[in-house]
Length: 221
Image (cartoon, rainbow, N blue to C red; front, side, top):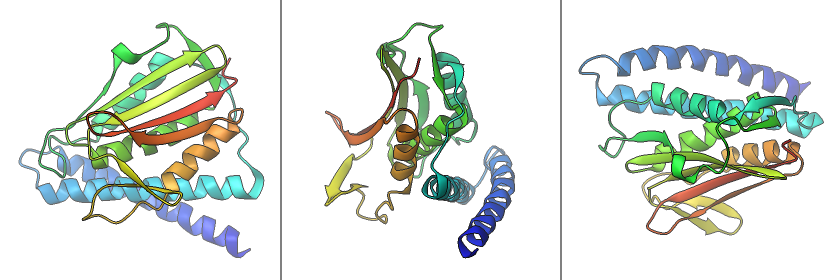
């Protein structure tokens, strides 16, 4: 009963944060919007994402995630993801640099009409978490792309930030003035990948700086 009540409380807070996010998004797109508004917006988005992750992981822990697969046009799915992330972006990041989130078409390994069978809501939730995390730590750019093989689908998010470090089994960002990651976002992505045929998630550094997140989903067709 206590766990159920906790989940209901978190769900209620998540809905309240969603309304606050709408208000803050309107604020940051106003002319001469204060930088404090952007910081508040990013924190609101981050907190809402963590709460949704908690609710999804709670369901995974209680009964396991049961993906409702449907055929999805991959290019349209990725374009919607990037478009939604851009709609909440302001001109400047917390570093004072302009940030862009875009599809890396040169790395896309699939046809324009390629499809996959997946739970669109669950995969979107996981990818939003990965993109938001990349936006938080990137300097200038976040690239998103998809690779498709005969037996798997690989969704990638790459930033040009400071990269990641490993302490024990905890992967965390190399940012000394920020608190370490709780690992909640990665745990969510792993649960979603496991629900899609026992997939996997990787987060590592790339040559030249930055981090690369990859989520592999098995049995996608």
